[in-house]
Amino acid sequence: MMQESFSREKIAMQEKQSKIIGRALEDLRSSVYSDLRTSEGAKRQQQRFCGPIVAMTFNFMVAVGVILTNKLVMGQIGFNFPIFLTFIHYTTAWILLAIFKGLSLLPISPPSKTTPFTSLFSLGVVMSFASGLANASLNHNSVGFYQMAKIAVTPTIVLAEFVLFRKTISHKKILSLVLVSAGVAVATVTDLQFNLFGACIAIAWIIPSAINKILWSNLQQQANWTALALMWKTTPVTILFLVALMPWLDPPGVLFFKWNLHNSSAVFISALLGFLLQWSGALALGATSATSHVVLGQFKTCVILLGGHLFFNSDPGFVSIGGAVAALGGMSAYTSLNLQESREKVLNSQLLKQTLPLSKPKMEPKPATEDSTETNGTNTANVV
Image (cartoon, rainbow, N blue to C red; front, side, top):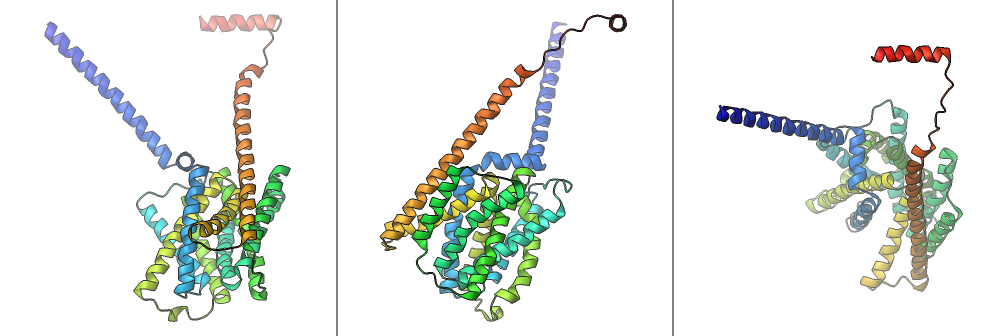
């Protein structure tokens, strides 16, 4: 009898343990499903693994690789078709995203009710002009004029965010941004060769570039979009408008280009890096802000200039080096102000959470009346 009771208790304990394990596995499965197969969970995972420092470092490293590769493609290889090169970049990106979706690796998009189709369509259109005109401006302008156009993006973003969202920045940040822009101008603007067609392209690129960064940042931070999901929705629109821009901005003869193994490999590597640049840029915009992303771009310019002077014995001149150092100082001040604001927001949120339970109004006891006495008596009777 004792053996039978012992065996029964053992079986009962095993059944209980199996139920606990099964419940834990079910909770784990639902947690994984929530993290990977819902837009909110995917957004949390992106914020967890790709914070501001990781996203901006990723974008910085890829951007340097894209700059060197595009110099090879447009310079040594002679692929002078900037809009078609952008088209190849986005087409490659869309094919890779389709593979991710087929393998169920693409994050889920938020419900269509939360984001109107017009917002996604507008972002796709703006992205085609921002990316296409940037390459066309670099192709038709001197480096100095191209850098001047890039510097003009910063005040355009500040003005556009104020007009669209009533977003303001502190006077200290404005001063740091002025120092950054002036330093980059002194460091890079050495040859302001004027070309009417190139100048028109550069001026036309400024507003789409600013709006593109603002929309990418706003949709990710306020509508639970992840970078890959937003790329999947907007890339087809971008490809469509790039096709429309090609006859107007690209020279003829793309079909007569020498598509040998060497040239095709260089263009393909540029396309892969272009996908990584688009992804890393979207991650950086989702983790920071449009203005911070522009400052990161100017930081890349200064680092490339100083790196060439330190490691490759290039001689940009004392004035250019001084401008780059001043720009880096402004970037450091801007970053410090951003970190200070983020710490203040965290402290304010913690204080708010601590004061909320203490701020609940205390209910004063009401004087007893006949109605309340009857009600209390009825409730007591019901409870009994």
